[in-house]
Image (cartoon, rainbow, N blue to C red; front, top):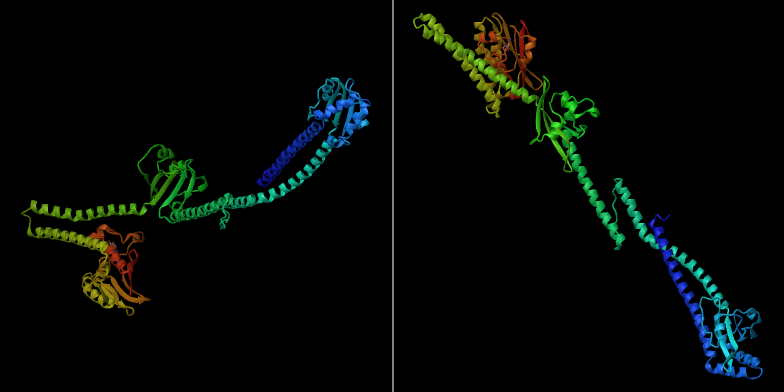
Length: 586
Ligand code: ADP
């Protein structure tokens, strides 16, 4: 119960009232007792003046001394305050025995007090001892300077005691009433303090549970009011901070979730504390709950441990490149992160390097191919030229044949360089629509077929064009489109033995124009088809070279068709024939 402030305040009030009343009570009791004593002494002093004692002594020397003394004293009953609690006696000064008394019951077995003894010696016994249960006053009446009688007044203090007793009960009642008032006042007063505190406590508890609420501004300007308002400002500041932190957290989480790089975070024990979907896609992480830094990076041969990162200081992140398999290459960046100025763990950024690696590989392959393609004709030119120099006297026919070979090889090199330039131009050309015009595909193909039929005829082949239906106009670069169609038809002528058939079709499917070139030539083996559009790729290098091919024709064709927003596909069967379909958006 006393744990609550309210009851502490009530108890404080009660104790305060108790001590005030006790202090007042004690003060009153002591002072009333003192006053009663002082009053007794002063009454006695006022009655037993020197004159009165002298008169008494005179009377004591006369006849019937006792009755005249008693008569004189009786006339002072009022000033002496004689009543039921105070009586007087005339004592024998030698024995101290009462001779005359106003109260025979009280004066029976009269005790010889200090004052009586003092009076027996002839002096006045007027010492009032407040601690005694009585007050007395003894006056010695002498005859010829010899103590004869003692006028003795004694107060039993019964009156004082009954006053005190009454006062005590009044005090007790007052005390009870005061305690009751103290409890009530304390209770209601303390409520003005405790109610706002209780409300604040409840709000603080709700706040700790993450419940924010709008608090009204306290109108009171006392300490509690100021505390309430400070709490209100604190809670709203905290709310703002939490909202800010949460939105930052959401932002960071969204970034991490949608990053194109994978992220892994480990604590200092090597346990995984964060992973984003990209990291899960890029790395074979397995069961995330059991993932541990050292064992995982050992399993993928990254050649790194937590110790390397934590204890060997490096400037900047540490990088590792690994191959997950032949098809996937990964770049890993390791860095430590800090929490409260101490290393908190390790962040790993995972980057898919496959494209880069493949590009690098194809770049190397391309350079190797170009060098190889150019070296072959150069070697031929060099060896034929040397033969001619070494044999200046050889016959003219041979010399002519050799010179023709040199010219052919030089032409070949020119073709390769021309094709490479075309490709490079296509690679870098941003304005594929530069020479755009409306082309009637049907007319264009008619003229190409017309021009090329002589080549077919030379190989004893039939080249025919069959438009299936009307084709809409195509918007694009005429020269480039012609280059594509010429290349496809010339391939068909090249790779079809004499006596073969080459057919060209055009038509419209929905919004697309299609051009189909079909031959019944040597065809392409199935396994070569996927790579047929790669630069310098040939099915049979010797065969292609014999026909003067560079291995760049189809890749140029694809690049051009792509730039038109169309598609080019090849289907073929070995020794049966090949079908090339170009589809262009109308
Ligand atoms: P090339 O200049 O060597 O002909 P291409 O890129 O035009 O190069 O063709 C690539 C390869 O595809 C050729 O070397 C050839 O082996 C094959 N090829 C292309 N067209 C045909 C076809 N119509 N019939 C058979 N093989 C073909």
